[in-house]
Length: 135
Image (cartoon, helix red, strand yellow):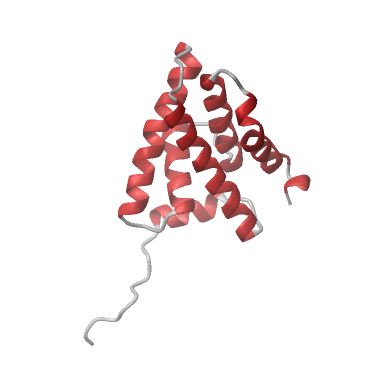
């Protein structure tokens, strides 16, 4: 699948080659550029990439909220590297790479690239109730 999809191939290349990028800030930018590409995000980037990643990887609830907040913080570090030349801490870079790796694994599991319309449904539609209340 990766061979036929340039965006997925780029993400796999980032994961497999990350250890060869000596400047952690540039490595961090590469990871987040791959995530932005996978989800087709070109505006309101920090919010969208964080919300889409969290919604793609987690069901609604606390874990999704925690992942969303983690993505927001990691993206803030990506911005610091991109716009101020700040060095990225190795733990933060590793967290970003693990996140990208989870997304890529999910793509291989589902056999399809994320669809923004489906992600928006997951974000903004109410889940059907699992149990019926009293009639």
